[in-house]
Image (cartoon, rainbow, N blue to C red):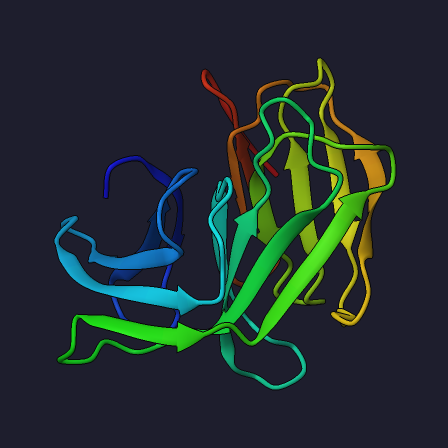
Length: 191
């Protein structure tokens, strides 16, 4: 792990969390325990890490399975028209510490108001909706990709709100859907 970018607690592996490197690494995620000790590597077949920035874990509201959402959402120069989110079934710790799996879904999306850089991906555990917060505007934008996802077509991330913050680099929704955290380089906001 050279430049951990996203981090999310595992649902099915007690006291462990998933993380990944920032842009340019292989398409892989790492499982680490709460003492930051390496547990295993998951390689994701046919995925590409252009600029992976965040990861989330949530129970799929339709099938009840724990899913990992990997956001290839970074775009420092706002030059990519399309971005991607990989969704995979959350694996359990095995004796084999280096495994390869397939993703279950790949969401290709674009922002309704043009390319954006983002480092925050959140999944609402109550609805299954994905939320992305842009990073570089003086007042960042909150986008929604509504569940269920039609992965046969490019999806539109709809701008649903402008927030009076800048440089948002992380965020999460609690597992009960009642609390939200967003942070930039100096502060953390809690709702």
